[in-house]
Length: 548
Image (cartoon, rainbow, N blue to C red; front, side, top):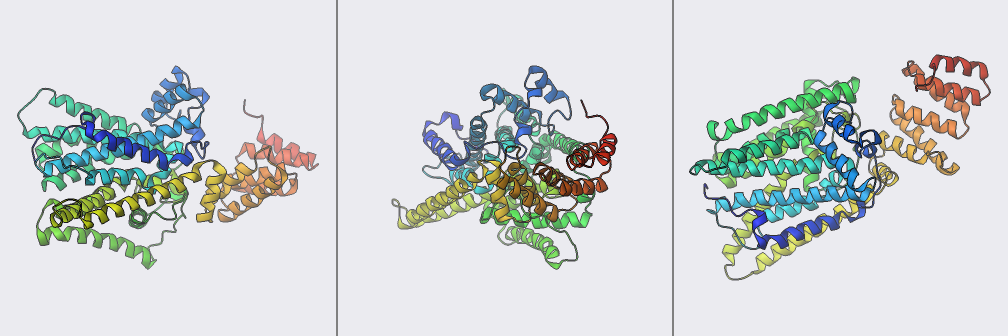
């Protein structure tokens, strides 16, 4: 187990055809979204004009609020990309696909070194389970939201730094038992730098040190304080600090506060257990994936929600039980290690910390991007275990059992790639995305509201504007307290000349938020258009002068 690492990916020419095949398959699966336009929140990530200069780059690093979230490495990447290809969305989509493909290759390297360590440093020939894991991760439809949505470059870019940091640390860690050599501390510093770059791209990567401890336990069967835990203490501290800072930004600058986020500790545990089952289900059966899932009602009195939490405890016990029955070996530790990695990587998104997207739904496909690495690796390792069994039964050539396994694997990849291809079509433009979301989740007021904004554009024909008004009204019906939905409905009614109805909606908004000067102004303009000049002047006076 302490033998030298196998040759790195870059120095082994025999691996390059596999690398090119993996990257080519990834690109093919995501072809439908490459010409896609900007969708929700993308305009806030593709560098706005105020940040496109060198002074803007300094603001990205030094000014809170200059970007939607303080992820300076991510927004520096967007800044550089805008310098390279401007507003062309093709460049951003290709970058996302490239980062995703590189992450899949890094996963292969990490798992290949684990596999070689178990074989005494011997590199197995042919198709191996690490390549199965990499291809599965590259083609799994659960990744589509992270890869096809430009805003989620925070996932794909941070994923590259996350896996590169993990790989560098694991290589450094394996050399600790060997005689001292030059550059060892430099390797640890490089791993730490990559981890910091991951944190500054997206803070969910703070789970990496815990994930590394799980991997080391899987390989070694135990953890050493000096050799395993101590080197990762600075990483754990940095991850905790970054997570608390991001949580503060979510609550104070982005708006993840208020009644919608006021959950008790028990309710948060129920959300977490249900979310774990949800994501496990989507990993195994990635059907009905959508941009916005229904928002759950969290009620501890509902038996089904309590049972989900109990079932998670039972599942954990069931995965631990083989260690007691058959002893602690890599094969018996693997299921529990895979689940612990999965749950740990998901922890920041399970509801224990407030995040603004929870206003719309407690779950989202992009939350599971890094967590997917765990079950994908576990399933691929099971594939490798079965392949070895078949080789022992059929030692001469490619037997019937092995041929059947390869054909089934190929069929699975074709199925995954086809689902990814179909899912990525939803991200071609905003209207397609919101219509596809409503087809799978008719209760999504987010999709209802945003679709109407698209349909109610100033140049929209009357029929499209009428459809937008109907859909805005539906969004208000789904969430009567949504100020954005009511505002959009009122403005669409105003635009279509239905002034009395627009006035009623503006007044409803002001009953909820009487301090909204822009609503007073819009109401005044609607009253003026309806010929009610005296009321209009009163509302315009209440609004005060327009902002410069």
